[in-house]
Length: 616
Image (cartoon, rainbow, N blue to C red; front, side):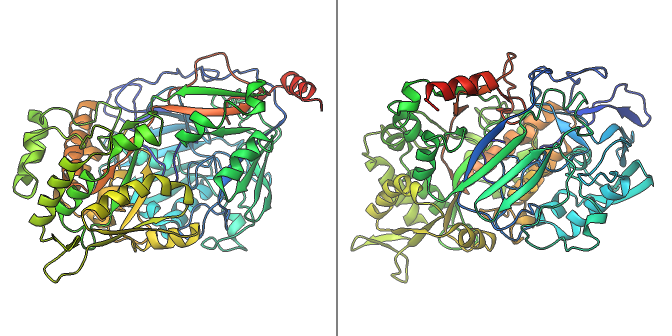
């Protein structure tokens, strides 16, 4: 659904309809402010409530898949909702669903209402009796409880981290469930975490195992059913006719295609040429060189059959970076990590490889008010000062900005600075080799799963070799790469983490000490830092947007000045291309999603005209 490879949950606080000290019931949840839509809203503003249903849209994904169970650590899961392992609204129903023209709101879907204890010790969801799984069996509170317990106990390790402060799911009646929180839990995130949990059928697992990879689709309840799986090659989703939620305000005008088909390609170049040949209908372009050079001269583009759009993206930019494994030498040393950052020449890369289309990332919370700027505020200092002895002085005295070059490829100044840092860390140049006291040359490996990224890393490798480092690239198949990363068996990998609009409990998984050694966890860099742990908890516990901004900015300073990763680049727009046979709402695109799969529709008149022009 977004520009992201993996990871996928935001954090929300209940917006009460009144401020009285009693349990509060609402039709939606929001953070630190009012909900945009009132209790009687009929549809989201960014959809066409009268959009026609029908037709097919074909998409593409890269590489392959060996399971359609997205809830496990095992296997390479198939595309679900455009995001491997992401919110699964194709197949699965959630208790509440996102509004994409608000940064931080969810509204009732399976749950008609939500009630939160005034002390923050529990949350209750009242379920719609009309909700059904795809086999027409009712969705009950037993299914919700089963899902929670199964994901927490048998699912991907991220679920146990997300739900660790939720102690139980108690069925109060067939259509009401209560989640109890730990007494000392930081509860702002917890109602949201269960609200967006995809619901599984308890009965469907009476005769099948949950914790196994499988090509047999799980029983779902969403607007689409996974109807056909060609292992490793194709997924076919079919719209559920007369779906139980079709006329709810949160679904009105959405999910309009009768069929969504996802075809897999093992090679990017072949996938792009297949698009120009009409093998699939829509793609978001993530390769700047392709967007700048490989579209305009194609016949289908010149003749107007394929349209190109740049869609604004108001979301907090995710973090894409070279992650260095601080669990092992040489990256267990901060001077070494800083030196590696100096030797990455973004300006040359952007000019020569990206056609100037990207900006440099300089924050874990880029493109938001949570990005640390200037010197720490008094409120930030209150959070940072207790850890002053263990933090770099620059956290308190300087604004972080990544090293800049003039883009010519001349990085002599950066090389001199890097060599001083290497020397401070015990590494010196001897016979054009950077060696330690035992005369062992520094050796590092970039671990990749696709060939296309080598053109970006090769110039960086050349810079590393200039200072005597034995730097290399290893390309593995996707499954082997995933296994190596899950076991933290790497030196440097490239990853991207999409930041939620309201950062919260997911930060524990990305940066928390307790997640650093959890197999399959997302603390890729191996961060174990008491200041980081404390600041993450401050983010989770924030009671106002200002508190959240302060804590996130303080965390940003610690992460950036600790050089756990080398920030790469970002683009605050979506580059999309599509065959001209789709209708789009006249309203402005929602700022927090490109919304293609759940607001566009198949336009029969356009499709017929396109076919006529092509002579079909």
